[in-house]
Image (cartoon, rainbow over all chains, first blue to last red; front, side):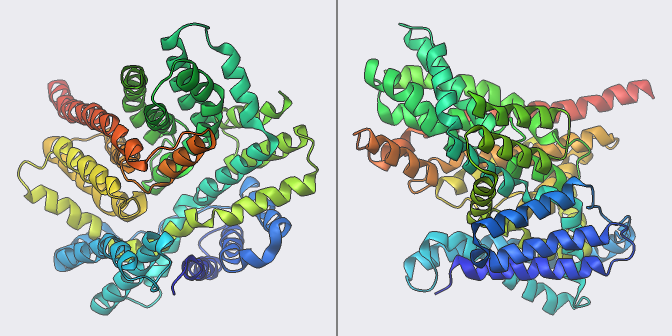
Amino acid sequence: MITLGFVYVLTGLTFALFAALGVADRSNPKRFGNAAFWALLALSMLGGDWLGDFGNGLLVLALVAIAGTGQIGRAPGGDIPADIQAERAARHGPFLLLVALIIPAVALAGTFLFKWIPGLADPKQATLISLALGVLIALGVGMARLKPPLVLPAQQGRRLLDAVGWAAILPQMLASLGAVFALAGVGEVVGDLIGTAIPHGSLFGAVLAYGLGMAFFTMVMGNAFAAFPVMLAAVGMPLLIMQYEGDPAVVAAIGMLAGFCGTLMTPMAANFNLVPAALLELKNPYGVIKAQIGTALPLLAVNIVFIWLFAF
Amino acid sequence: MLVLIGILIIIAGFLLRFNPLLVIMASALATGLAAGLDIAAIIAAFGKAFNDTRYVSIIWIVLPVIGLLEAYGLQQHARSLIGRMKGATLGRLLTGYLLLRQAMAAVGLTSVAGHAQTVRPLVAPMTEAAAEAQNEALTDDQREEVKAFSAATDNVGLFFGEDIFLAIGSILLMKGLLEGYGYVIEPLHFSLWAIPTAIAAFLIHGFRLRRLEKRMAQKTLAQEAGA
């Protein structure tokens, strides 16, 4: 049976290849920093389960030391000239589009297939495993037809990842910070603070505090999942559900969505907000957040009104 | 109260634009120490969580494929495709993607599309080409805004579609927590109550996409008047 472990090995090998190509790239003055960074990530993917908790912690400290002292950078240039790209696009265009669509198509088909036929792959991880299979198939098909130099996909992939740089591990770092916050009981403290700040005797005031609290605390934690248990315990359960007898399904479901509005507005949700800015090579790292605020704020207001209307 | 110091460090660090990895590590250490943990325990807790969340970083394996296709001109092809399509405006294109992303997420297909898989190689260049078709003299700032909106549309579509799916993590979390308080609720109820917000998200973001399209076209007139 294919498990997530198979995907970790594949990812680890990819990072190892990036590290090897990186160290050989003499045009990059920071090639050793880059190579060390990707090599450590390869080690994490391949051997993380054998390193132990403290060992993994040391690995993270090493990653932070490399990135924090500015040892990561990308080589200048190396882009394929636009006229060559245009000429190739004219020749291979429709085929390229087809290969690009293989990844989502296999992810889609695999998700269903692995749930239908048990035993092939871990059904809980069906989509991630299918995504990895889609990558392998797309790569095989692309290589067979285009016949590029064998190292070209890895080399170009490394250049893209160098452009993203240390932001590539931000999501994992923030998720880990959330775990330390949970251990230290940050949630309970924030919940108590918000609980004491609510005006007494006002249903709408309580709904407002709950919705805004979900959004705000999600912005701090970068994740509505971390904020939800805290806000439910501080406001949702004692006030909205028990005292005012609101419908728990509405309070929970729309409260969570109010939190998602917060996710749209925070750099802490790095994989959604900062990583795409790096991936699209935006000058402003907060450009995506800027584009989202105009949707997030009115939608937050709508969610608060929805809770008030539908739950009571 | 002292454990809130980590939150202050995060906010200050992001505002002062220190390297975020350093800020996160500092915040974790300060929070852990404030809660009375020793350094080794904090490092171990951080390391365990880092190892448990490796699946977040799996997405980078798509980069060799994207790199290969882009070297052969995928972005140019995506652009020329839009150039040949009459009526494929920025607003329609992104609104269509928004609807598609919401619909896919609503049936549980969240990882099928995304910033690395679809936005960078396809959606962003197509949207940029559609904006160019209406306004030949796009400024760099306008290009940047169009790209940012491509990513934003992916996020809005994902967030306000996925909670309609019965087996998504957030619904399981809600069900589990409420059961802890003695309320047993079928996942379907959470799913249904995600629908009004999904519709509102589509309307609000769709409206903003239309305004973006108009704004991108309007500046042309100003530029022409100035020229």
